[in-house]
Image (cartoon, rainbow, N blue to C red; front, side, top):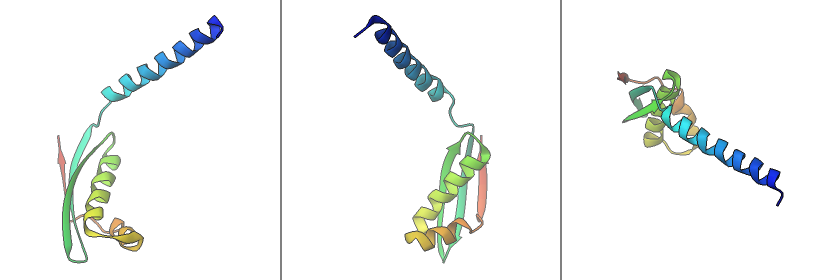
Amino acid sequence: MPKTLRIALACLVAAALAYLVWSSFHTARFRVEVCLTYHGLSACRTAEGRTQDEAFRAAHDNACSQVTSGVTGTLGCQNTPASSVVWNP
């Protein structure tokens, strides 16, 4: 293997590792607990995200997964407003 190819490969691996380290320090900034009721079943879930929308969507979807099964139920639940939303620091 030519020396320039080894150097290029080493730089690529170093860049990939640097990105992994950098992205691990940019953690979630928002934490939310979302509770909802769907067809008489209730669930509350907490999630974190880099944006408020990302955190809310993750918590809402996780709560829906606890009270539904199947595609139709999941889609219906995703359009259901949350019964409570608590933002945590």
